[in-house]
Length: 399
Image 1 (tube, rainbow, N blue to C red):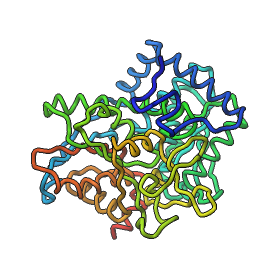
Image 2: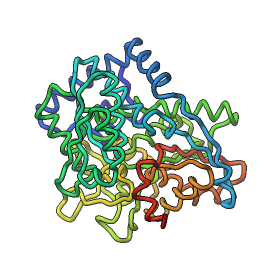
Image 3: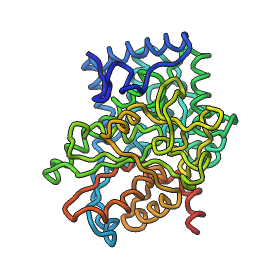
C-alpha cells in the first residue's frame, strides 16, 4: 500500500507526468526518502505527532470565512475563503514544513536545506527547524531577497542562514537549482522541498501534508452550508496550496476545480512576460520531473515574470498537468494588474490583507462570481497573508 494520490497512475507518475529524472546519486537519496515516508505514514505515532503540532502549534483547523462585502456589487454567487493566512507563520507552507521536518527527524537528520520564492516556505522551514533543534539553510533568488525583505528578516531571526542566489533571473527556479546542488553536496542533510514539484516522491509527499486543507474545507462546507461548494479555486505556481484544497474534492465530480496562474504583464507579450505554465507551456522535463514547462527558443526553461514571487516558476506540479489533460480541473490566468485590484478589494472590503499569490485566485473570483447564480458558492483558498508584499504593492496602488 502506498500514499499515492487519486491521480497517481503508478508510483511517482500522474499519467505521463512526474517521474525521477536525476543522477544516480540523487536517485538513491530519493529512494531512501520514499521508504522513510511510507514507513512514517503507516506509523500511528507519526501521524499523532503531526496532528498535535497542526492543532496546538499551527492553530488548525483554519477558518472558513464568507466574504459578502467582497461579493457585493459584483452580483451573482457567494464567496467563501479557506483561511490559510491564519496559520502560524501566515500561510499554508507550515503544514508541509512541519510534516517534512518530522520526517527528517525520524530519519536522523539534523540539517535542513530548503528553497523559497516569496519567503513563506523559507519562513516555515526556519520555524520548523527552530522548533526541532535543527540547522537550516534556505536558498533564495537575489531578486526575491530584495522584494521579500520582511521574510528574510524572519528567517534570520529564527536562526536560519539565507543563501542568496545570483544566477539566471535570480528568482524561484534558481533557488531550486541552488538547493538541489547543495543537497547533492551534502547528502547527510534533508531537502525540505516546498511545493508539489520535483522528482518523485516529493510531489506525493507535499500533497500528502497539504491535503489537510482539502479535508478540513470539505467538512467545514458540509457543516456550515449542508452541501459542497459549486467551485473551488486556488492560485497555482508550483501548485501546493491548490493541490492541498483540490485533494478534498477530486472525487466530487459536481465540484468544479480551477487553478489560477500568473499572466503577469499579459500572455500576449510572450516568453518572459508571465509564468502561466499550464495555459501557455508544453510538456517537458524540469528539475528532475516531467510536467508542463515554459521553454525558450533554445529548449531551456524560459525566463518568467509575476508580481508574486511565489508564482515565479516555469514548471508546475505533475498532478496539475494530469488534471489539466484529463479535464478534471481547468486552468486560467490573471494579470498583475488584476491581482493588485483584487488585493485592494479584499483589504478594503473585508479587512483581510491577502498575499499577492492568493490575490490571483481572488481576481478570478471577481470575474467568476457575476457569472454564478445567487445560491452558488465559490470557495477560494486564501493561501497566505499579505504583510510580506506591502512594500511592493502599496507604491503600485499609489499609497
